[in-house]
Length: 236
Image (cartoon, rainbow, N blue to C red; front, side):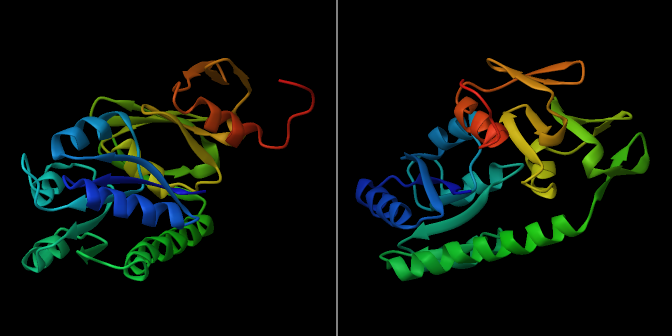
């Protein structure tokens, strides 16, 4: 699966250069390019990405200030013409710091750090069949295969399982990163569903047990493709 990339830079030529690099990289997908931090905040309220290529010096808010404002930041690679910002970037746990102008090989080296880290995380997730969550003052063991779907509930998420449901203070993005990608799919900004528990699909709805879960209009084609794949017999 390709990693979704958002490019944020107030310089059109810098955006175009990064777009070209992303298009040359088979495992990357360019989602959007934006020119300001404010646009980025609004975009990320509605969309999920894997990698944020972020310029530091921008007119309305610096990239550093933008990153500090996130409660749940995506993986960030800073891009800037100013070397003096490098230390600030690494203190914020960014993946890498690209000093303009940079080559495609240097760009690829930065991106490969994310790919290697993701591979390690996926192997680690595949090796375990449960997670621990905090709920009602207790630490509870939840088996991954028992999770039917997860939904947001204001600042919390509610984890539905075949036996019970649990409310815990964590973001949907964070729990998504802890679960194996081959077993769960994001179908909406508010929902993550367990593939093995899907009973049927109807239009923009997924049925899991007695629950009807809405599929985002933007994600509908991707969701259908991921769920059905080459297992469909007949004609849609």
